[in-house]
Image (cartoon, rainbow, N blue to C red; front, side):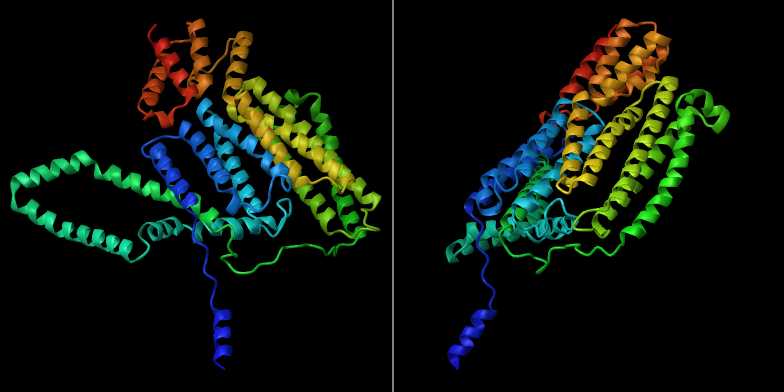
Amino acid sequence: MTDDMASSKAQIEKPKRPRTSPRMLISAAVFGAAFALIFVNQALGLNLTILILLIYAYAALNSKPAMARRYRDEKLLYLFTVPAVLLSLTFFLTDSCVNIFNFLAIFAVMITQYTVLSGNALNRWDESGFILDVFFSAINRFLFGSLRFVGDGVTTLFGGKKKAGMLAGIAAGLALLMIVVPLLVSADAYVSLAVGNLIDSLALGDIFLYVLMFLIGASLIMAPFSTASEPEATGPRRAVHFSRRPIQPVTAGIALLMVSVVYGLFAVVQFGYFFVPRETIASVLGLTSSAYAVRGFGEMMTVTCLNFGLIILGLCFVQQKNGKTPPYLKALYVLLIAFNFVMLASAHLRMECYISAYGASVARFLAHSFMLLLAALNAMMLARIFSDKVKLVRLFASAALIYLCALSAVNPERAVAKENFARYERTGKIDTAYMLALPGDALAETCDFLEAHPAVFDGEARSAALSRLEEMEGRYTGWPSLNLAEERAKEKLKALLSH
């Protein structure tokens, strides 16, 4: 009876979790110290590039206990490290609005890599159920492991009776000092002055901030890695699979045919606008160039997203014959893609008309360049219609990363500046206030342009340049915040205003 109770008790008891390795603790402490050093009282710049490199270095150092899948298993995910690192360099080398998208893309890549390579994903990363994996297999580990660094660090340093006694002595001493020091300060004016000077020289506020940032950095980096090999913190889950195809082909075919007829009639009208867009904007539609372009871009995005959704739903939920999509459904899918290209062409011509009338801007450049990405995505969707081997999510993710890398290399602000300089040579028109508001390399090239064209650099432009220089010099520029493009622009502004 006793043996049965003992065996039952052993079965009920949960196994002890493995203690975090010293290597993981030490590397997390180093990461936390670097995190505090490069981010306390600093703006984004070189520090973000260093952070991304440190995260990958930490992952490489602790890959053995935390990573379950190797390069041969997930080659593409490992290769995504290259664009992620390249995009991180933009925070040091350039100053562009694209950096916001780069930031989001980098951490999306990292979260995806961790979720899959740690072996905690129940779904492939190109499946819809992977979104749940990101929340329940990655983000939850940051939360449940957030105190792991402090807890395991204290256990390692002060484990055992002797070390625990040392910790208790330190705690008791600190508590006594909190009582004794205020008494001494209040008893003597000289002591009070000396203690006040000492506190001012120590900058306790900054010390507290550094310690806090150290703990945040060390805890955040160690949390997912220290819990990677443990069971799911949220309990058992199952992979999400959508295997049922409840929609009959004839139902989908009739619905798509009706939509295609409407699209066809709309396309006929659009083709009438393609050849004389400027003359028809005001006379036929009663719209300005800006409203016409904005409407065209909105229509393109709405229709493209709708058609992509219809095609994906059809490919996933419409019944197949002998494992293949009926030819008439494929033809209807192709019609939807063809209409996407019609909308792309329409939006392109509208944007060209807008830029011709008012000049280039960063928003117009981004909208125009995004159309190239949409054209590539439509081509990929077209390939998927005819082949089940095409992995849309993988292709879409790869195309998006390549697009961001290309966009960062081109530098939208710099491209806009050059386009407006060329427009000035043709028309004699340029918005100097807008040009001087551009960041980084675009601002530096604007300074060169204004030096070469002193007639444009009037009193209003000089006032705008002076305000911009004062704004840039007012920022904190420690070495972690270093941005080479901003430094070049600052020197160019000083040289321009010295004339």
